[in-house]
Structures are given as structure tokens and as C-alpha cells.
Amino acid sequence: MSKVTIPKIEYEFLKKRATAYERVLKVAQDELYVPPPTRSREEVLRAFRGTRRYSRQFLESVAKGLRRSSYFK
Image (cartoon, rainbow, N blue to C red; front, side, top):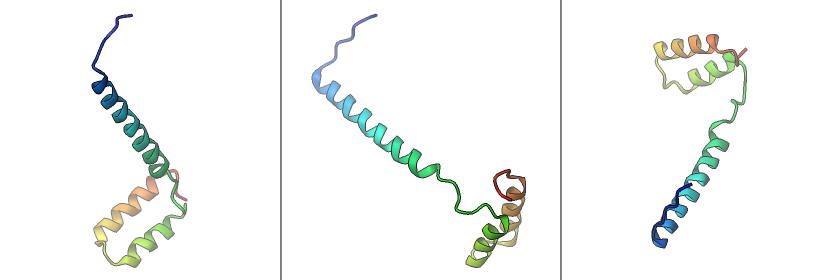
């Protein structure tokens, strides 16, 4: 194996950056991979319709996607 020598200041910078990256990655994994609170397609669509913010075409697209999903019942 080859040896690489870098200045201490650069090593500390790289180590601090790697540690920060690991923290961000852990938080992202914990927050992004949370399953939805419901598995009901109708409940999801009802919540979207209830906001009155989405167009009919968008809601139809969401419904189509939910029908294709194996997660939602």
C-alpha cells in the first residue's frame, strides 16, 4: 500500500467535512425513509382534495400512481 502525506490542517479539514457528511446522511436516512401514515388510497386522495390546492388533472395523476403502487390498498 502506498503512503500519502498531507498537511495536518488539510487532514483536519477533510476529517471535519467527512464527519459533517456522515451526520447529514444519518439525519436524511432517518427522515426520508419514513413510511406514510396511511395505506388507504382514498384517504390520501381525500387529504389532497381537502386542501383545494390541486387541479383535477393532478389529482387524477396521483390516483393513477396510487393504483399502480403495491404499498397502498
